[in-house]
Length: 212
Image (tube, rainbow, N blue to C red; front, side, top):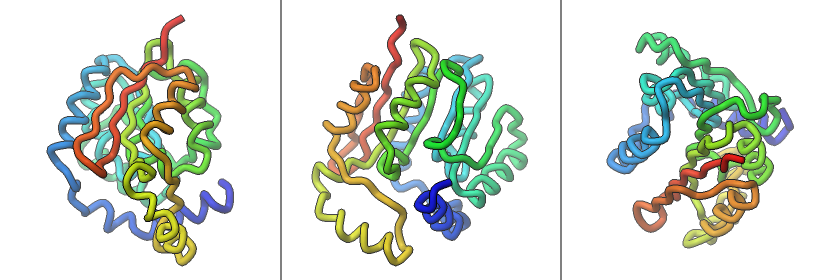
């Protein structure tokens, strides 16, 4: 990992236990996103999630698919996710530490890729979106939920930079919804579902890799 990625990994390691106990901020919106996502998943699907945190979403989807590969840059987050899988007796998930930007992943090997609450935490967001496109089989979907702070909360940018400098926040990128959608389109995706639950909420997208 790069020095910056290691710094962010340490940040998430330090808060992993607290994060795992924190309730979901908007339970209703979360359940809706799970339900919409499952409309695009098949029982034999192979899916990949990056930025999986403590594995909650991967574990929720596991009963509806064939196999899940889930990664996060934080070893502590992954350790909690692995323990959850053992406790819940879920055997079709592989949790492992990894940085999506640095991973060597076989092309056209997944039916769906999930990147939830993560794209705004990446410096190399556009390259990651292109990588996901390469990872997906034709017709596969990229499911994201992303804080687009550039629309209504751009004033937070200097505050977040200061917080990261003192170790109280990870890297956060500021961009608009239009920026994000454009980056998906430029990578070769077609947006097939778009949902913005309320002002200042994350933008939920499902983007399809078009078949040849």
